[in-house]
Length: 117
Image 1 (cartoon, helix red, strand yellow):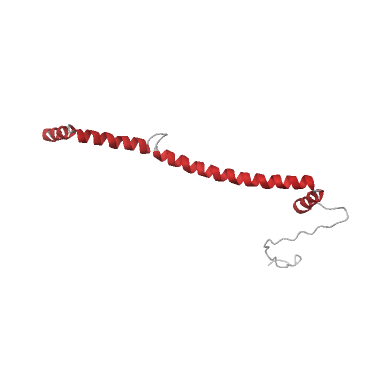
Image 2 (tube, one colour):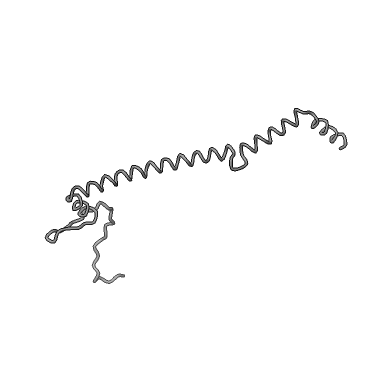
């Protein structure tokens, strides 16, 4: 046991080992530990890229909404068209039929008066 301890002290006394251990500890601290580590930097960079794409999506949506608002302000027929298409509004003398492509189950025709056995 004493010889093992003496060997460790002898190896530790070499300057290369001390500086090597300190450098490894420093690299681990800078690379992976803390708020300013390289790993956190990469996470922040990915988060910024996600937020930038989200900003671009909202910006394009804003531009299309502004275009639609300008159209509604300039063209009164556009407001009527949107009211008819989206909200199914109609004039008093009109009927509206909504056709749907939703799949429906075929219900068999049953006679409700027949007793069930």
